[in-house]
Image: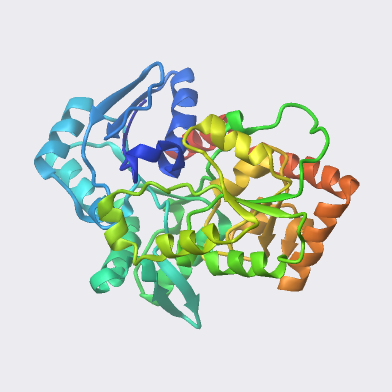
Length: 383
């Protein structure tokens, strides 16, 4: 079976921070080992033995990747590759890809991965669009294109039960017809490189890691509240692994200034430092130096590969008890209030025994998300 995946890369300078690229880099070798072919069509090759690459500029900012579509070039690439499975990672473009398959007379399966749900919340049957994508009131057209992808795709992948339920609620709210049999759960795999080897030794020093994008809708305000709350703890430091510190100019223009604003506030705090995490090795070292990970306080978190990175390294992640977090974070690390957060944090900071138990639970919780097991699940979807 031949897979052709069309994948945009948000920031080629920080390729390790692109979750879609990491996802494909982990699954492609597993597919190839099972005798399948894999071609990544996008701006950056996987550099994996057996995987081919076709260069394609699919855009570099959050709006361009959702609207840029070169019919002639994409048609030629699909015709050259003759895929059995056409895997697209931008559901807004699903209708365009389906149109090309129809025009070519191709019977390739159209596999659509909804990596991001452009929804702020669903309440009382009403959907609020994602404000971060609402530049020029584009939030609703983008959301409707995502929801419409179910009609033109053969199979649709989502990361979690939370993502699935939110998607179904949105479809019902807009009264869009759909076939639920097309929907399949496929959590992102953990990165074996980011897994701890054997038992953890002595717990690290009292550092708390925040390894998420500094976006307003990712809950950065809550992170600032945590820092203020723990200002009296002179023995506790915070480390920020800013995954997209070197965003390109077009992304900064569309970012509404929040990233730069939050970086400025964090830089002025005496107990906050920024990790040097340009490479995967440096990123791993940053996690390894910290005692606790802090999940993004993001109400629409359909998954968090950053949190899974910490859990795999045996670094307990304290997460809010909502969204997808209960699906991969140990229950005793979930909080429902700021007081519960503080209690969990203080326990992990002060008790080596509690930290060691939480560390082992963290590694155990994500073992089922290995690249091999996720590849097995993917093949059951398309075969």
